[in-house]
Length: 237
Image (cartoon, rainbow, N blue to C red; front, side):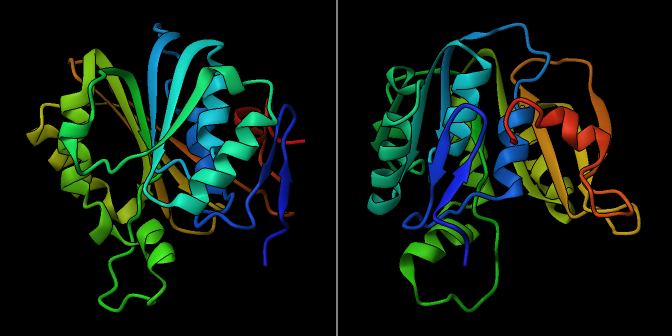
């Protein structure tokens, strides 16, 4: 069972009630999304905010941005609100119960949309609706996520996700069908001896030069690699 609190350098996340616990995937996305991007302000949207982790990381990294976090789980939103209100970034983050599948409920356009989406596709659900909504793609299919992100991005906006490595080809194809062009890709594996199991992808509404890199999280002694340490240096204690 995870500990109720996860401390970062500039904020603390409590995640004992949230359907989405603090994990490596969220930390990677929060530290990587929009990196090297010229637009530092504007509106950012965190789809499936869970504990508010990624929203807080973006607020720390982009001090002039306005961040919105949405989720469909009341308990997660309550805990995210508590985490954000206790932080120094609370005035720039708003939270709302909102279903990203309902495109008509959105009135804003966003410079950056990020999501650590549900991606499990097992035929048998757990029976715990809250847990299933956070984990199973049936509650927010990739096609719906991409289509609506494309509609809500500003001109030259960015869309960043972290998904299973084996889903990358299909996800990129879906984005291309929605006129989103791949600009950055980071293939992630736990150690050099393990296969890649996650991939971070960033897309733009305009054609940009594309780069692909790899990230190995741990060295042979199970210590954070220099690359992983550098990526998360502003967050992990």
